[in-house]
Amino acid sequence: MKRIIAFIFLNFIASTTIFAQKMDSDSLLVQTLYQINTVKNYPKAIQLGQLGIKIAPDYLDFHVALGRCYMLTKNIDSSRIYFNHVIDKNPKYKEAFIYLTKLELEKKNASNAIRTIDKALLHYPEEKEFHLLKLQAVNLEKNDEKSILLLNDLVQKYPTDSDLKHQLIELKSKSVSDRVGINYNYTTFDRSGTGPWHLLGLQYIRERKKLTLIGRINYADRRSFGESINSGIQYELETYFLNNKKSYSLANISYSKDIVFPKLRLSYSYFHNLSKGWEGDVGIRYTKTSDKDLYAAVLGIGKYVGSYWFNLRSYVQMDEDKIYPAFTATARYYFDTKYDYATIITGYGTTPDERVTLGQFQQRVALDSYRIGAGYYKLFGQHYCTGVQAVYNRQEYVSNNFQNEFDVFLSVQYKF
Image 1 (tube, helix red, strand yellow):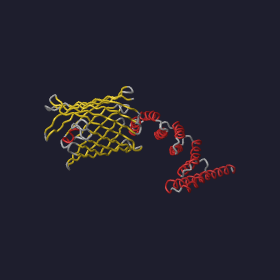
Image 2 (image 1 turned 30 degrees about the vertical axis):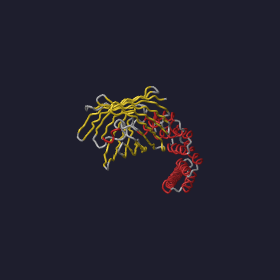
Image 3 (image 1 turned 120 degrees about the vertical axis):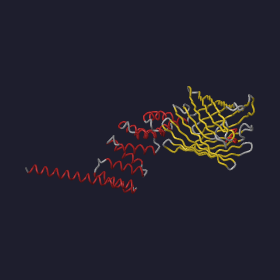
Image 4 (image 1 turned 180 degrees about the vertical axis):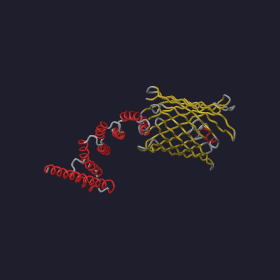
């Protein structure tokens, strides 16, 4: 009986000791995390963490805490040692994988980051955060084809994530190519003695990852009662260029000495990625006609939602101290590449970005206009970019008098 009582007593003492030790360890861990997250006293946190390991060497949370402290104090080698120790002891410890991967990403070490996150994905194949970390690591390698392959998989895995779709479209749009092409607009009117109008454009596009240059020569012929009443040539240069990882710019200049076009047109827009699939743009337009200087401010907002892209752009246009607003709304559905999509366009007012009617911009800016249209663009094979678009415009030509305009646009480009 005495032996049984002694055995029970010893077990009680041992259990009490272990429980007290666990209480002390938990309390010490709380203090360590408080020093890291709240006070940000990293030397004190390191001191507490090392004490915690002495008291409970198998308590892996102390190793993670020390790994974070050394990571925050830029002691990278020590940080790696603690995170790797945790992973070796417990290969399912999520936080250790996350912190170690972020450490390698911060140091721009793509191979180590990929190796670490691949280990994590063996245990957590459905963990979205791990897939996104792997995408960051792959992007560090600057291999667009590899990034596109991974993004294709992620877009299929997470079809409602508009950020992933936006990244895929943006990456595909950074292709390196040269294109030559021809565009043609045919515009008819339901008013006797007006039209048809012809607009023909030849263009060369040099597309690189950070800079795109476009040169165009446009020819317009406006006819009435079967005869040409105005015709001429316009020269145009346009460029898109990256400002940084989240923004790019558009600049355009065009010149003509013929009355069918404005004498000079200048435009600039700044585009910025606002995250979560949103993009904003702000810009200015200048149009010089034979006897007027016209200015317009531009403000737009766009959003990627899955395979869809929506955009609303507003124009505040000034003429003789009067302000005339205009709006254009665009919706697109992308099928595969940036060259494959269907689009719907609607708008109010005449804007300086409309090529077909730009020669009458001075006369139309103060008049009402209501338009709607649709188009389809397709890449055939690897070389032929094609497009067709039709627009109906209910246009006021003098006060309270309207005409119906129908425009058909055709485009063919050869990509090499």
